[in-house]
Length: 348
Image (tube, rainbow, N blue to C red):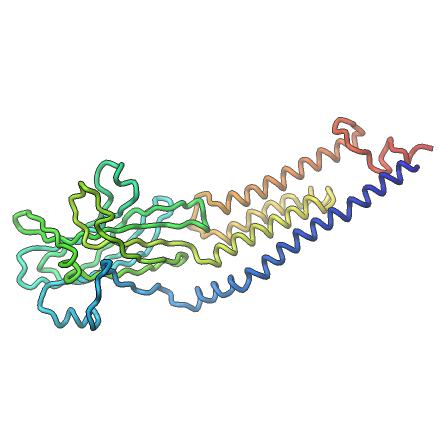
């Protein structure tokens, strides 16, 4: 009888400890919710009530100082020729790592016997070791045409599996050339291009924010054997809004906490009955976090898969232990429970 009381006292002493650990972990989750909720709400409000499109940024070479007066006023007052283009990123294909850029604008070439060509070159860090030229897209402006509207696709770099912490980078080099009727090509230098080529950039993506563009030194992105001389170069980055990241982390943590509660604190019978609903609930979080056009595996999918594996694995282990005790086996060498067959409480 004394041994039974000691074992019962040990079990009663271990039970509060388990709940204390659960209370501590739950308090940490609640504290994280309280701290991050204001920032998430602010990000959501800014995204909903803010402008639907990002600001338009003028692309200028490093060290170039814009004279007094707006660009439009300068163009109307000057007699020379010019090209004015607006680049707008309208879509990103995360699977093929392609950015769709809408190019629109106009140019003036009074009395020109040549055409102009603006070539956008997507530059990456490993171009020096790769054979051939980097991917590019050319916009040709004949002297007889005034307006131009084209859509081009250029590659970018990123890791889609890191969603919603994925980032995409694109470095563009701009080559401004004259195309003569006899086939000659003349690249305009940086100072000439600054006075004749006017570029602006804008991001029009619904679930991404843009950082940049950041002007780069055109000489720093050009390899020694490149046939093009870049007049301008800049870098842009795209990432998810802050609230998307916070929402993903908090929902995964909360569903993992709910799964841990069901596995460790609920009776085995309730856990078996509700296991299917728990798994469906875990996977249903994906439809909230990930847009329907994303069909590839992301970090959210991997995290939710780990939660499901944890639930089903823990259910299997608890069922194995339950069957072991009911079969009165001693293979697992567990301490017998108070009141179980073979314990001292049943002995007279």
